[in-house]
Image (cartoon, rainbow, N blue to C red; front, side, top):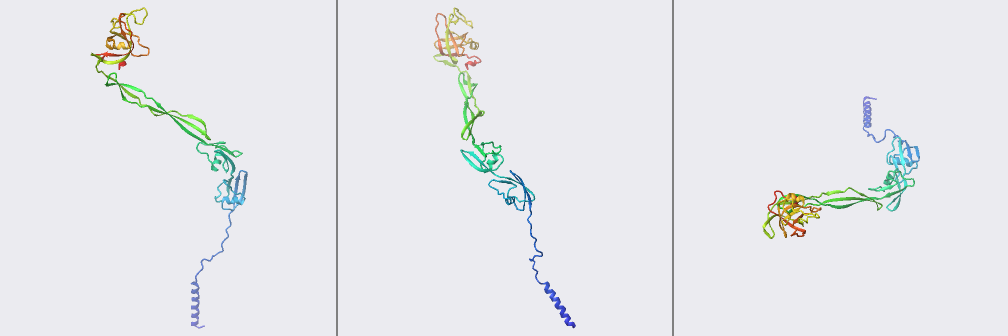
Length: 354
């Protein structure tokens, strides 16, 4: 082989290598064969009302694992963890099957499947929970009875309101700008309102109890304020223009004379003021006499007189005056009259004449 042939062979080899390097590589083809995945098997501890059992499962969820051993979950059956929970590692599953109960309520019987350890839980799971004041037999916190019969008692309460009026009182005060003997209402007063509440309990529509609650004053009474006039204004006695009076007052009149003083077989000719008993002197109860002794009054049909004597009066406290006469000119008086208290007025008006 000459030099030229050797060169051509070398060039050919180089081109072959370069062409091989430029060929595309199929990167999608696996470099190694895939490994086959093996499902993980877990040990499951199952707790049921009938006891405990253990099995192995490679199911993905709790529900599917239970299905593998033939345990199909029915309506309102419960498990913990729940059926959709993933089965991970060694798991303890609690299974609580529903049971059939009979609920007596609103006049009918309803048979349903329910779950729960107590009556309240079972009713709630069955969609018939106790509402408001409702109660059950057995009680809500009691275990579900062996016969599965539960009675619901519908309980409601109503409120009866009784309104009463609280009368107001009248307070009195002196009114210097109001004429003596005149009463003027300064504030009218307002009655109060008292409310009595009665709570009535019904069970299945039948009244079973009443509870009287404390009375409540919803509006207190407001006392009336009445002004008693203290302003003295002199006026002429009707029919006696020469006489002026400062107070006219209704009084019950009787009459007496020296030997008609109320003491059998005794005659009294003098008065407490030292004047003789005759027409023109009058007697009043001790309280009135102490305030008015020596003052003058006018009594229509009797005339002018001076308060000069003390009499017993009436036990009921009515305003009373006893008209004096001599035994020779005695007249019987018995009835209500108007007594005019003549001027001048005393410095302080007695409270009983206000």
